[in-house]
Amino acid sequence: MYVIIVYDIKVERVNKVKGYLRTQLNWIQNSVFEGEVTPSELVDIKNNLKEIMNKNEDSIIIYALRTEKALKRDVMGVEKAPIDGII
Amino acid sequence: MYVIIVYDIKVERVNKVKGYLRTQLNWIQNSVFEGEVTPSELVDIKNNLKEIMNKNEDSIIIYALRTEKALKRDVMGVEKAPIDGII
Image (cartoon, rainbow over all chains, first blue to last red; front, side, top):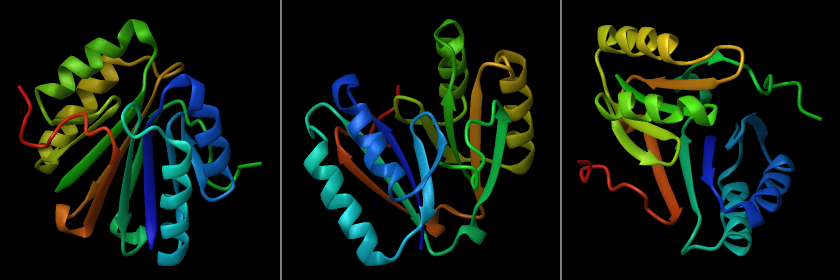
């Protein structure tokens, strides 16, 4: 399945969230990651994010689709992170 | 069609972008809007965003899907904006 993760995390935790998601997905924009995952990988990602986030202060939205093909992506302005150009 | 718009806009323009998108879509999270639009409405939205944004400094990603049904949304932590609770 294909996921888009968008987050709004307090500054004291944001680097931890970003650092973790970089190990799992592709960084697309400041607070946006995308990538292909298995259902069990997604469960792990959710569990790890739950550990890192403060659920009373932070917000994370996970959009899941059956396939990336269901999605058309249009980037306007600065392209922060070409999808294959991640370190 | 169903769209998700995620933006990373410099502070001096962010309220203008947010204010405009609030007239068109549902506010979901700090920098995320969603909603059902026609193809011609989406063309208008893109044109208006182009007017407001600075394409050398700002980034806007528009995800378009044929239908909202293709999407599973999972919100962790703070729910900023219930989808029907927008002013």
